[in-house]
Image (cartoon, rainbow, N blue to C red; front, side, top):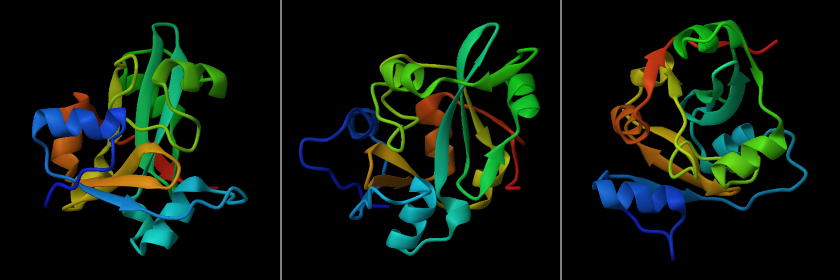
Length: 165
């Protein structure tokens, strides 16, 4: 996969550039009325929604953590708690997520966050040659191999997704 640079870059693209990871920048016109940022990205970019991943912050007794799951799935809180070696987690307050990562909700990237957090990637991502994650703002996704995503985020891999209800 050829590396393309975004004009000026985001913290996410800068991390990938510094580490020499091959990635592609995928952009689309974000619709502020979209109900699901991830499904909007999949449709606008013409990719299977199972390959588009969302980055979610959780909070437990040991602090914050990150779960990365397909946009067509929900984060299994019990499974991500176990993967993070916590007893119980809940979704982090969106304001806390924004302040901690430096990104806005709907554009939170697992890469280049202001504070590096323990991260867990859903095992389903490894079934694809390339996955897409937010590039740090709405309308900007980065396509890269799931193995490179694991390496760049120092993520653990576990079954942390469950079907949407």
